[in-house]
Image (cartoon, rainbow, N blue to C red; front, side, top):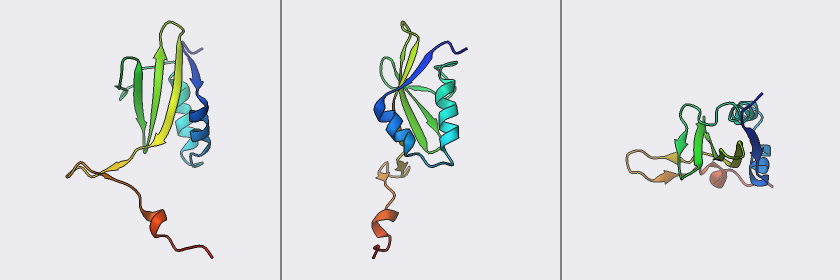
Length: 102
């Protein structure tokens, strides 16, 4: 039995629905594991009670409410690809340059 109840905001539910089938089970397993351990290894504190975990190419932003024993997942999105040499964000341009559909 988990110590914390894991809740997903509507936005996070929609984002999870759009995750490719290959990544979906891994993300769901990690999100549900937040109920047992709301501070997993690699967890980073962003604000007072808001944290982030990275799962491959995705990041999960969540809030921990210790009084209510809840973990609320608010955002689930792919990580931007960063150019480490210049610090600039490089986005995937493949959709922009794909052949036009006729």
